[in-house]
Length: 212
Image 1: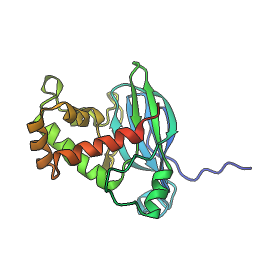
Image 2: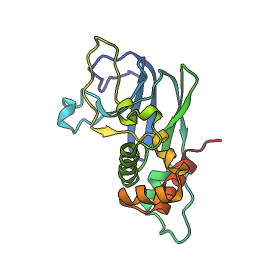
Image 3: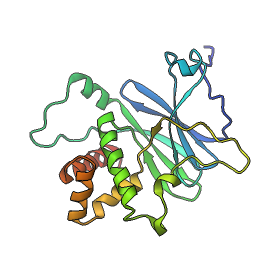
């Protein structure tokens, strides 16, 4: 059978590893470069920005901190429903049943997971992440974690166009679980939710991404 190229990324990238990220019927491609960045690319021929489907669109980006040299895809398990929670719809059950994350290793020996989340969970945790970053309660030497996660490039190289979406930073979000109860309440309220609601979101993500 012939191999046909549908689309490509027209910007320069020294790729070390690639893998697919699956969220129901949505398929994304992960690409890790030599500078320690990870990009989520999608094929969307209906978008005007894709040049009639010839161009892969950068949906999200994240600076890991060290070059990712291996990405391994694995299927996510469906998280257990909390007591008295409504049953998910048929479409939601189908989406949850077909979700895959990517386990990655870097050249400095660190390990991590890139996993899909639904839009509602992403919006809530992104707001909480912004509050945690602004508070600066657990930032090393007072550095800005959000700036650190912006895409980096070698000196003299062209910088890629900013991605429209933002990957959540697990290092920042998990610091919430180690904070005092009153601080958790204050930050969760500032993000528009309750403390127990935020902790439940963490539980669902951790349970779904577990593979051991």
